[in-house]
Image (cartoon, one colour):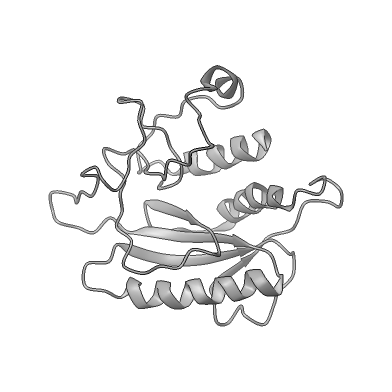
Length: 191
């Protein structure tokens, strides 16, 4: 997975400055699936359309490791952009459950998607609708561990004892994809 995973051995985050791009000994590309959660708001839809346009431009590049793409629409209903952007419709949280914090729909939508999706790629990039892809995105995972951008306000090491009460370490290989669903259930529960 390419979502936020702490590098267990070095207690540091993998970043693009490290030599994290690797290929198998056969030279096979390590494709990843791009998933973006989105609402049906005009603004969010516009962002997704722009993102998907640039995704398609770079996916087809000569050395691209970008695989499939899914917009996870957590409105619970289809929209007119489903033929333009590959879309999975997730049901929103029940009314009032988000307590006004609409972002809580994201982990719930991701759980629904992973329960039903048949993802061919070994890795998943969790993206945001406002990400504009300006060049092909490499698969930055290394040694079976994910890669993530180190957000200054997210400090899991600082609060590891609290986090470990709710989220246990998961050690698995990319061949066993069941950990994807388990990770999302933990994410949903913590949220």
